[in-house]
Image: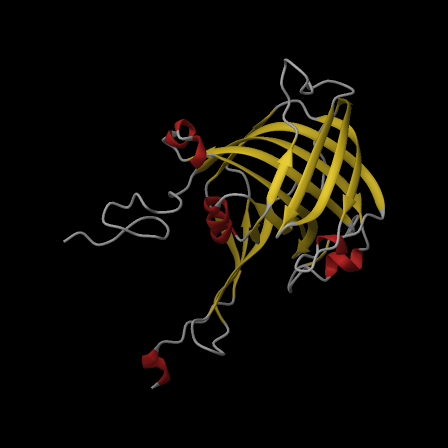
Length: 273
């Protein structure tokens, strides 16, 4: 008798029902990044101990829209596009742990279930949302990747608009920003199944790209608006001062992370006796 298996839920005799395959995961995508400064106290309230504010520019925020195609090592998802294509929008801040600067995703919305499942594994706080951004194209009315090209981006969740931006390319740049330029410091949390049992999983982890390639980054000007919503708090990271905006096409491979600290405690029935 074959035991149910698969890398993630749901498990089955064949394993093919698993929502996501085992890493490595490969991504190709277009990124629109808008960086700005907010009140550092608003960043600090999103950093659980032992994380601290970044020593330099502690109020810097990057709001990023991404249009992805992703796949496992066999690349079969690319020929079944509903399993490969998704979009996301996410807010990144910087923080410090033991004197090292990290990036940290504090809010993120995606439009596919498999992307949420990957986030659970990686420590990204993913929620469902509606994300759209203008796609470049060399023909017709779509913008080319050139000076003066204009891109729009929107984010909504639970029927409420949370953010919108218009980005106008200026010219080639040396990078696509600095806020999201460090390894990620995330928490993996899972409450105990028992009432009052605390956290069954409580880990601080570091992760980043196992491989990366990218096209020419473009600097841009941006108009960014954030909106209040009953169940979302992105607008608390209010725009105090624009920093810059960027467009870039990238390819990334993710293949696991590193445990920085663990506070997980497992209490078995025999331990209680």
